[in-house]
Image 1 (tube, rainbow, N blue to C red):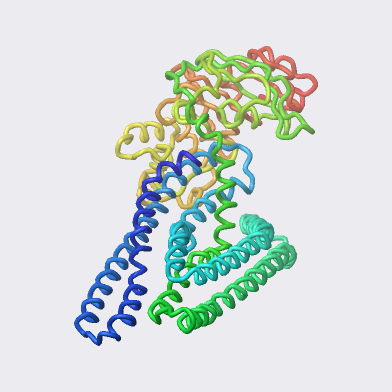
Image 2: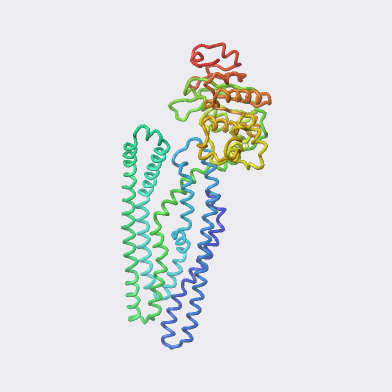
Length: 556
């Protein structure tokens, strides 16, 4: 976070310079009033009044222009920070394997910081350093006016501190409860089919209200506290004018203070307390921005090390898995010391009972997960040593739950790369999977929009499109997790032919499967049960030992 903010320091510097000039020019009405009341009225000179008015209006026009420039600077600052922070945050979110609320709402935190920069509270921060300057001017008017201003400033600072202490914890709780309510709504919407089919609408609504009621209660408590403090602040600000004018009148009567200075001092008093009043009004936004900053700082603190991962040359496809242990929590190991190796161009079928760790192993092989112990090496290099983009461009992966993006067929096959630059590779991948003719029959062919998550396609079409994406640009290492779960007999034959073709080209393939058909293309078989390797070896040797766990697995 510090590095990103330092890139925006020029905006802070220039905003500070403009704030200096603006605060000087804001003294114009005070200077005008003092001269108009003390000189023009006594001399009855209209020429002097005319010249003073022209100079005052000109100065205030310059101030208005500079205020506009300052606002634009802060707006540009917020957009620049959003671009820098948004890109870094999104990359970090995509790298994190175990999502939680901190990562889920990280982009909202980026928006919170962007919106905060353009609030009046930030402008008040730039005006606050000039408070001593105004106090010095008041001292030259009369020391008693300066003393009164200091007392008022201390009272307002105490109110600001009280607001921060009284609302900070509850405001953070409000944010947490709000996110909890939204999490539940997102879950309900994503399971809408089940909710309607099982008639769970009333129970969902009641459960949501229990969560939302806590949020509303906390929110109401915070708003009441803020309203009370701001009412006190408003009362103080309203009475400042009365006391200021009263003190000025007393000094005019007993200390021969001029009426112009009396009124000018009252205006200057308002300028002195304005930044503090703005800070109190923006107290909630400061708390939200500070919490968002802390969350993003915690999220991005190790990004620099991640971004320094080395991009290695294109792999040959020699795979080595060395005593890999993996667990999401310490109560249960998902993989227990898994070891095996593949030479370039070999195909491995991973089979086993449900919850045996097959999908987890597939994710470890692609670098999505990192082992708690042990190594996954591709051409002798630990997968974690590769930069994510460097490795991802050289391997193919088809997850069990095929995940597509909104966009066209061509864009999804090309992994969102520019279509015009990869037309040949896109069509080549589609033909190899056997979906070229199917794509041509779509309304707009390769330019057909597949909808959100590919919802305009059938399950089989989505799976074959995901397979074409996996083999795009001829990767040397391919991991397929249940690639035929939605395929019919003809499509499975196409898949078998594809696997044999890829093997002949030297592609190393790992296939996770429950169906016996794909085992025919395998050179080796790995059998998993409850995270343990039951058997590993050439296909003929493993299939000849149908005992124990193997007997429970359907193989041809």
